[in-house]
Length: 477
Image (cartoon, rainbow, N blue to C red; front, side, top):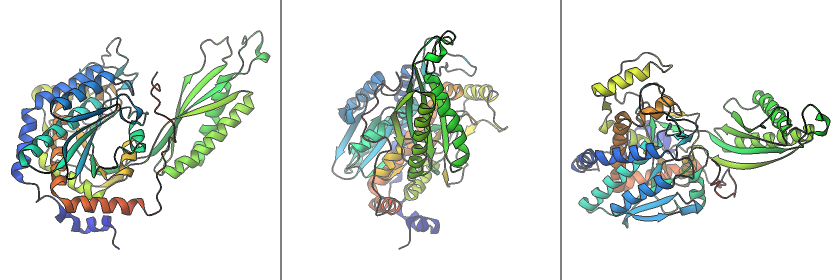
């Protein structure tokens, strides 16, 4: 049997999409979103101001739910044991098309919406990954599709999943584990970026844990022989992990941060903690490397006379690329096009560009110039587990100045400006057109599902990388 990826290379699947969605409906949806642009801006600005970290997004989640409820969506809050997670559904019968919405901010980074470094005093977190825009675009798309379902009389359900704690909390994994996607046909998502692209990027699987060492305190000078330093345990683990880097597959990534190393040099710490991530394109390899890290932790404790325990914090599968859907999304993105900078936006972009380690390029627009391709991204996301459960497709939309990396003050600044808001509106348009295509095109849905089954394989069994633990609602405390 010929694999679907091969069919795509031959162009056979191209006939499955594009012509079925009526041009009038597509133009109507795009016009609808342009007319509702102020709402998209309001959502993006409000969440940018809230800047709540993972599992603490009470105001952000409630705000999004209130907007969707006012539009006639049925809301189910607090799903999967997570107070800030929700489902919002509109419609009945027919296919179920879902759109993901993320809204957690990053701790330890703050910045005003200006083109020079300007931290906001007293604000401990910021949307340096653009999740305020993610929510604005996804919610806008869902409302536009709801409008299309009403006016067209088409059958189907559009659903928004409010997904907390993407940044290291794996909120979506608990939702997958609870079976919340079991009745969904296709899932759509997007992300803020410095370019427009619907290329099919897979990601790295990853797992994280906090390794906690306990020892004995004593005066570091008067009675060092009575102490057993928990920090020594952490440092011994880090030393062994750094040696291990030479002897893992080259695609693997191991990184850590010491979250507690003691408070005073003259007090031998009886507690210390280090937070580790392990990544690889294959989930099985993550598990194997992780066993070695756990062995190193036990050895570090034994060698320093301390005790160690660890808590798995999160774990994600790599994104399962669905080329059938990715080609369709690429087509819809090219229909929508990019954005043009106003003079004010161009001045902002030019000023912020001088702070970036990026090659010279001509600013002024954010068009779609990248060819479609399937590639590997070295990031990780809990969307990976969703893509294991159901055929999933996403895209990146230009919301930042070209050359901007995520998790930077430059990304945070642009996410609070019209450059970011315009990008969110473009995302909403693209997602809306993709959803309409999927509602109308049964052949496309079936081809995507067939590819999904083919790539998973007959013997695949899903087991969350984070195990059976409950959501770590306090992991950001």
